Length: 320
Image (tube, rainbow, N blue to C red; front, side, top):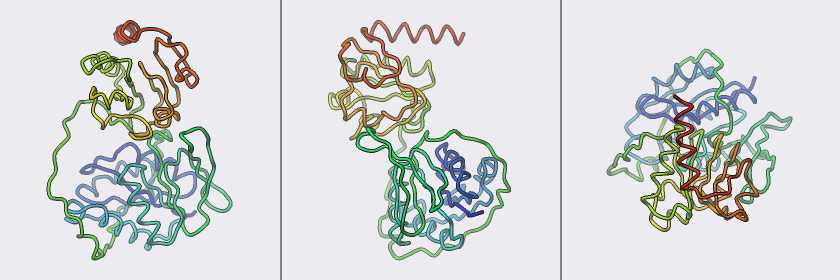
């Protein structure tokens, strides 16, 4: 069976959920070989093996923490040359897409980004993508070299599939460009205790209809009752009501949760482009003609300040 490289996104050995989703997809097209880099790389092995990694290639060096993405590209290229895989899968984060693009250029291969599904094909892996602001779905494959594919979070269910997970040390020689851009400082982002927006299974968003920063407490209360992330439309962010880091849309972040609840959001194409691939969409809006209702699975025509608090209380009551 052909091997498939999976780039591991982890924090000090704690593997992030998108990587586990990649392992599920990798098993459809071959035998997963995980590549874990940086501090705690060796600590990822048990989790990766539990989710299907036949081998775990690890490497740690100061360069991964002190410099930007090039050291990681060097290491992934070394893994590619050592394994000769049928495909390379990378999480579709901002950093992940840069790593994938640089790797594809180096090895002379095509790249597919933001895939939402993956299947085996006679001529190589076939990726499903949402294009033109998620108005269409396409099936594509790389026709030159080895497929390099980035996968959007929440594109596949995490499925445990115990494998050997044999740990092997990866030999890496850093290029001259590896130390070209040094990280001079870090500021820890203040934790809200909520899931990361792009990885959350449930997202609750507010838009222009929230009518003020102080009113986002209503949105946050619903999100907290569901264990959800909080998002915002561009209108809400531009008005200064919520941080840009939480913006959902074409100029913000793309999300694909199991459940997306849009509150006071009209549904302009800019916003739809960032959430249209959500599995189930619910909207609360007092304008029955709002474009968002053309997209939803369930719609509530009403004032969000009357509907959302009642929904929050009902959820809390059912949870006991």
